[in-house]
Image (cartoon, rainbow, N blue to C red; front, top):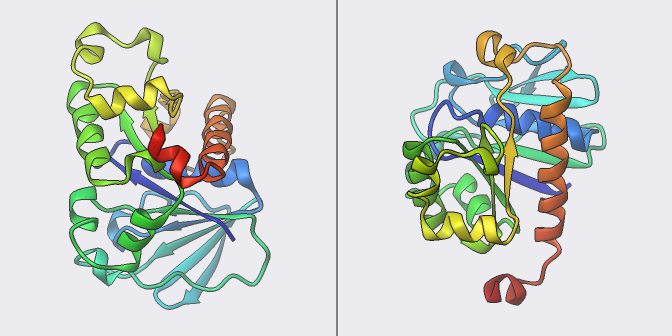
Length: 228
């Protein structure tokens, strides 16, 4: 199945929430959360726990979305085991990378290979100067023409001037080429985290926009991306 990596520009930016929303929008699909066991953000997401599915992974089910979480304590991205096999068809696997971009891209692993070789990578950030600086730094170490940005917060037209005035060149290029998607802040999720309850419709609508942009980007010839 196609694999769509989701990478947080920094910790606690909402990358796992975005990954789950993307899998929900692409269902039947799977999320593979690659963070170390104690750091997993989708522990409360499944409505049914299936259990150990092999190779260090625990599997849960949420409607028609499989959620695979690593149940071991990992010291780095090189220790993330290969994803477990699936016994049912899924249209897409969303890879919730779960590690700092600087770290995962500085070591050799199957995760870094996917990030550097994927036709599309979704990078998640928030509407703040420090977060968008981290986004710019992340874009600089990835292949920028293959990146989409999912920025959690108000729509672009409502960003404060203190934010827009500090945007880097690569972030501006994503805006110009319509590869930056605004993701609404959901107060209930910030308070309680992800639960088995359905995701809010505004979040799912943003996920649909990201999936459409990802499909378009993935189908664009490499030379055209470079020219852009």
